[in-house]
Amino acid sequence: MPAVVVLGAQWGDEGKGKATDQLGDRTDYVVKFNGGNNAGHTVVIGGEKYALHLLPSGILSPGVVPVIGNGVVIDLEVLFSEVDALEARGVATDRLVVSSAAHVIAPYHRTLDKVTERFLGKRRIGTTGRGIGPAYADKINRVGVRIQDLFDENILRQKVEGALDQKNHLLLKVYNRRAITVEETVEDLLRHAERLRPHVADTPLLLNGALDEGKTLVFEAGQATMLDIDHGTYPFVTSSSATAGGACTGSGIGPTRIDRVVGVAKAYTTRVGEGPYPTELFDDDGEWLRSTGGEYGTTTGRPRRTGWYDAVVARYSSRINGLTDLVVTKLDVLTGRDRIPVAVAYDVDGRRVDEMPDDQSDFHHAKPVYEHLDGWSEDISGAREFDDLPKAAQRYLLELEQMSGTRISSIGVGPGREATIVRHELL
Image (cartoon, rainbow, N blue to C red):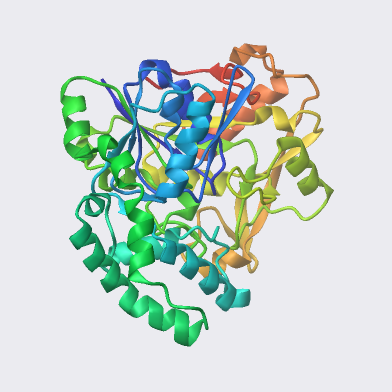
């Protein structure tokens, strides 16, 4: 049985949660392998909307084992707030498994994230202020706290002391903030330990064993390709590996065990935070996409930046991730447009560039070269087969498929789980 990676092919918020959720009844494990509660998935089931920030979307599917992998950074307060909210709505969360090697977001990470962003001023990255970047920085600097450390108070205290030695100097002398004590931090983290204990496991062992048994695993990325720490629009990126390679390092399975890599892309594009975005719209069309598409962050509520579909980004994402399939979401949002622009290349200082510029400065100055495709006015929300779509909508998708270099296997025509056209099965 397959191991399938589902990831964002643009700048995030593409509808990865819905794509993963659609695989739920054929999936045994859903694994979140990167990021933290700085992003979210919105899943609509039977008219009920569920906003997930840290939990894998598989937690909404009965019988699926949701796993938070070692590549995730975890805010325990957020984790259990989310668990409580789901249980209050009748969703069982007892199957949740958390990697013992995942890193913990401590209170000082959130404090540093907020004061650092303010300190940067115009050079700010546009983070959510939830401590994600500082937690990953501690991981790389080898002063991080892991889930397993919560079960040995002496080890936990030593690690917190080591982390705060430098951070308190920064808070006091650079940011003019009060020092954070070891005691308050240890106390804050330990209050979650016993509730967490039953969920903690050696997840690489668990997941590889599941693959050996013929189980089906879906690996769910947070954020997206263009926010990847290595391959995104650096430095306006997240702090983890949001591409297909991150599924291996963030979960502990080898690359030869991955069978399919599914990219999810909106029928247009959006972005949150700072950074270059060639097809961004600043006019009435941009506002129309925002209001019609409900483009406000699941986690932050921030208005998303909006723009037309960028085939250059799609080709890049296909190449970087080795995509086998593309899921296009929110096609219904474009209904009512007479003509729909699609960026097929960039103009960089008078030069036509057909692939993603390697130089970040070039990408920052890139202007989209558009082709205009015919739009449609018919309501497509009830379409369940490709042939149910208007001919113009069919041609739009076939053009995107050719431009993007990956077959379009699934199309979202509405927010609900059922509002989907399947051209090729993903499992």
